[in-house]
Image (cartoon, rainbow, N blue to C red; front, side, top):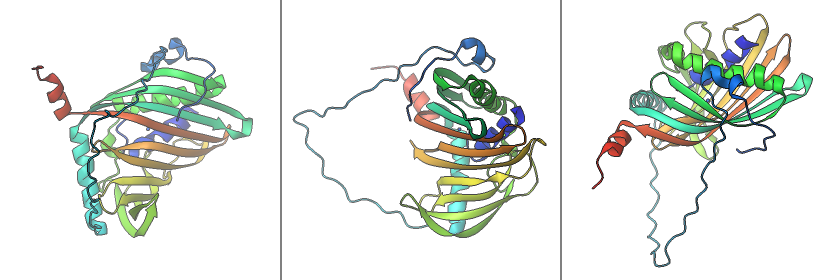
Length: 286
């Protein structure tokens, strides 16, 4: 089971996550003993809710005409994506986000939901703080907690360059143009150069106007265990404050003992910090 969960997060990270999440009802909180191995605290987190009310005398500005970027050729979009990924890796100092994990074992009708606060600091720090959990304790202990531990281990110990979505690891073949939620995207088939754990075969979708990664989907090319027969995933991304972040990953694994395992991870409320942000925050107030 541990190898199964590790593979799920290897794929989350292989498709561009440097650190892979809708509110839900919670029955009970997590214990610090169960989560302390990877730095999760059981303290509750209250997320602030604010309402912005415009002043009565505020003048509504005249709306400017929307700017439409030209559509890139497939080769240029791919080059732009690779350049954006390099700049993001160099420019992202840290980020905070809300993580929601929903995991299910359909064959045994077991289910769990876990909400956490995530903190990532480049290059090798990843921490979680528990907010709420509901569901079966087996799912929590044997799927979600192990899955979080696998992600932390990957960030702390593994060479992410070996699983990055880059020409060094993959062959990209253009397969046409389509749309995803109103965005024009170029579609590329990806095949890894080597049959290495953490790599996948499938497709990636790049925004045809910006080169941003919109979606990645596929299946593992190397099972890490005899007990895992198949693992497939779909991951969606959004551009936030100049960076591309994963917002949802859906994965399904077929295992010989527990049957089918279904995991959905949602990430939201991103608060990225860049070198520029740090410099601004460190300036003395006037």
